[in-house]
Length: 117
Length: 114
Image (cartoon, each protein chain N blue to C red):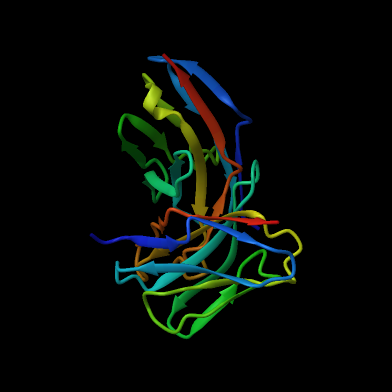
């Protein structure tokens, strides 16, 4: 079955530091890949997505590139802010044999990011 | 404003009681989903529905039930058969068809069994 593995957390950084959160996946076919962010006490918000190999998703200074050869979708940001403190989830969507999606998402376990001033 | 609403935000239940969590969306989305979130485990799929009057079990459906009588509503009932119901429950929805596989999430309901 499908699976997503995220780097162990929590991650603690100083403001303006470089961020990398690793994500690797196992899946058949060509799933879409997502990063969601969850702020304390809230639901998940889509941060960025990529739907095919070599696509780069980007939003709010965050980037991730769909690497099929390494089955990875690592999240990066060049300069983090205190307001980026949240839990980050990597996820992939299922695909059936015909290449369409049922919309079922498989999530990684989440990575807690804390940014200090 | 379009979006997904979940109520209540916090819910307390005594052991042995059934409880129903509400999820409503005005995005005109066909598909709706229920997830359970536990610390350090990410989100796990409970049930999903791709169309009115139809739904399928997810990975952890035991002890839960759902209905989909209206397009905009997908309530989840946590029954007394659910052995460990204390968790954060998230509802999501998306359009169907094509490459429209982005799910949008509600704010969640935190259920605590006393």
